Image (cartoon, rainbow, N blue to C red):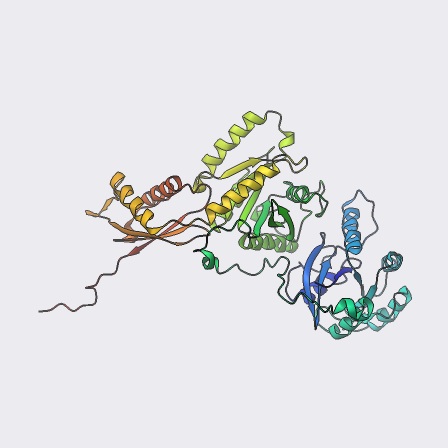
Length: 475
């Protein structure tokens, strides 16, 4: 992208709505409640013939540095420093407030180009607020409606004038091939496309970080990045949007998604929290490997187990991270207990990798990344048909399928139909009669004999075709 633009303004003026309009997708959460956005979120914007990076930010508020609002403001100021141009959004419908004037002065002192945007200009009675915006001394405001897409051509012209045509339209443009930031709302399809390829250790890896509120997810990602990129603090439920960040680990690009903490469904009553949880669930579907962060001081709550079960049912590769390990007094005894509980309480994915870490101190983070990559390799694993059928023959000799209604079931043929996660098809007689206990026996056998710990394994049973089924009986 040729340049970077930050959207700033006081709370509830329509910054996230404008962000979604420019990126062309509903990436940022939008609600009538002021202060929905907290972290800064980048995205790839398209405005007529302009291509640039856009950053959505939290609403600017006057507050102490040690408060949540103060930390949100620090994130916004970091976005302003990072950007080449600022879109200062005011609400033309409600008019200017003292906060608008305060932050207008702040932007004027920054010395960077500013485009004044009067949003909600389609509303009745918005003319007064539009003309009041001239008093900010930031030039002529651009009247738009982010909700309805009005005034986008004028906004494009204002951006080009502020940034300069040379910067807006570089001759060696990068084209339109960039991937959008966190398109977690799109389903990930085509997993089967890469099934026949060998595992590529240089391919970017998508990792989602999930867990209960206040488990330390954002702190963990900040420690990976080595900077305060995500908003953190002692308050539970700070993160709302699913934010992606990229960094490099041993030459491999890691795209990591921070998600909102997920409480039990019965406790989620507010609309905004429901939106945040839905966004987190979409992040799980978008990711390849999911790190489930447990609070090591109070691990294996019911919600922790439900989150792990959800990830496995979605078919994602899962790794457990026991965070806040620096608070544990007897690490060896606690670690042995946690590993025993992992095997006992999560039998659906035996061998699930569990790593003690501390997002606060950085303890165990390199080990966690090693386990993430190892689990992803298993998740992408393919087994040849010859090996599978040899294994199937030996499995039936060791433990034959049961006889149902006096007739023994026969397993004839087996092949792997896809990876990500590993899925197999078995041709057999009367697949509906095969008991669940024998299916579990086969899954555990595959897991042990082909070294596939900690990932969901799926087996589909199919009846073989009867060549005489449609042939008429001859007299």
